[in-house]
Length: 373
Length: 148
Image (cartoon, rainbow over all chains, first blue to last red):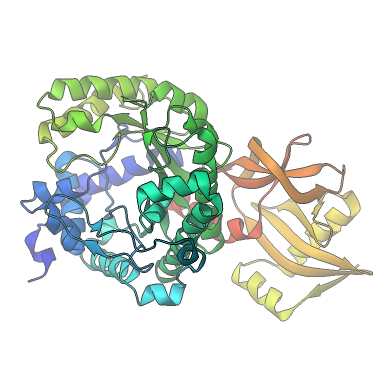
């Protein structure tokens, strides 16, 4: 039995048709009912359908079908995604292991000497096709094309360029290199970036397009000064998107700045590539969710922005608090020039309380209905 | 002026639904007005023809215009929204340095920004071939379908 036999079909003419118009709203300047809500659902979808966190990652076709199915319950996005933060690293030599309550994690660094770093080479498109990451994405999108084609958006992930690169030597060692041997740190990041570009190239070859998701997670103000965030992350993100566009990927781009970007947010506006279809999401400023008024004033001229409800609240049995935070985010961002999406500050937790997701969409209806402000 | 189109260039133009005459018209306009940018080896010029902004990427060799590429986009160029750093290009008309930046583009009622080459003093923007032929073309398709 295939996973597709586990799920009833989505309500295509009702829910999905409406959600698709809503999803397009901020990008095509055609307001449709309310502002969209994207709590970045990953393994919560599996949990909500009765499966485990491990199932979500170990059985990607099941995982992505859960996302497509459960989005209807919560009235969220009409498109599917499946990912974790370490694409392309297995091809560079890292071993990943599945966990019961976590996404796949590295079993440990594979490089311990500067000579080994200097010898690193990006993985070619042809070799990626023989690897683990790319065939997995091909399988997922082929499954979606066959079984839930209305939700298909082929996505290629650069994801956390700095964080994924650091896994090759270990995070602490990588951070040390950025101070003591910056050329080696750049070599690590550049190798990962070029490999990721080749992955996006292969995906866009097969599907005619590839949305890009790329972020700055390890590179944040808890670890680095603004200058280092620019050098090791923002500049690399620019290069990644620019090169992917040159190879036919895009035009959709989702920029995810997770962690504390209290001052480092300033390095991104003049550095990133802004396409006609991009969304910028910044998780935190210090310990607080990133202020939506700053997000709007700084970035609304160039991108759709995504405001945040603190992910911690999503497992707190207090939907009223989620509703209030959603309300404040919506009131602050809903009139952004190039559109607004209500999100959570990072992936909503696996055991998110459904009542809290309802609180977000209720707030979006109450304070994000177009034509009411 | 004599125009040279290689077979490879002709094939790409045909795939993009562009006429050689439109590319020649862009070059004629650029050569008479100096409204073009150059990196010292080649020129990029643009001209609005009907609903398209048509571009010619060409080099001048004696009295010949050797066409390197022709491309177009349907999104209309509006104002510059961001300029970031100098490019290797110069605006022939004024001698000004061309900057890398972003420009508002409008299509089917939607206005979004995209990467561009910009000349802030004149407010002029140019879209490079790789963007017009792939990301912008895909974006135009999404706008037409009203989907993202």
